[in-house]
Image 1 (spheres, rainbow, N blue to C red):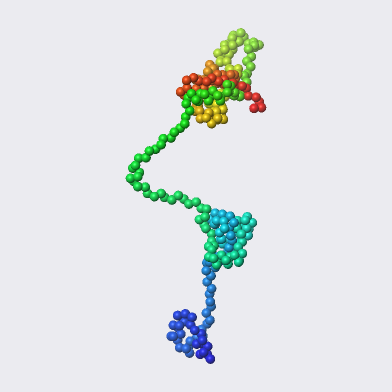
Image 2 (tube, rainbow, N blue to C red):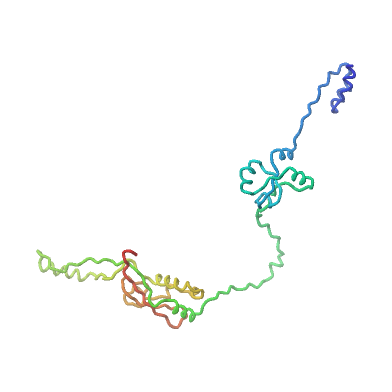
Length: 280
């Protein structure tokens, strides 16, 4: 019976067969039953860990709406299903998809913009050919048309608000306890000092300020906005203007002329500098 029991156990590998041929049947130790080890493939592990869902929206790096992918159950339960990004796939539908051979998996390239590829090499003979380059055409207004637009859109009076400088009162009366000679010297010293402007202001109104106001008035019309005007095209005509007529530093009304390069005659406007109110 022992021999029958031993012969009933057949070898499972070449090593066992080689060992049985070398040993005698009487001296052969009893064979131990082999333990079967199950190896789980990567695909089987993914089927156990992930579930199959159907995308309801286009998802970058996942796939287009309507495709089937494998997803972590926690992400599906907490985020994608409440936000209606994906929907669960029933077991019966999943069996039909497998039977039809439908591809189940994410598309990591979906919605990803790739970098520009290197351009192919250009034939050197092609580079040697001379190509006609069309010059850039700038649509400038003529000086006459620019002056017409300035006459139309620039108002007769341009107003600015500035803060007046308060002047100290000068005591011209006779001081008690001083001699006549001291009074004469004091009067001479006061006469030699330049008299301050009665309407002096903090800062000034320059031609740049006038150009800024004129450009804001021209900006309301598409054609007038193309008028090119610089600080050198504006000049104050008042004798009290400093330097070459680039600015004024007192309250009052002053004449200013505006003329673009190439124009025949300038236009004259009035610049009014008034005192700034406390609430302004």
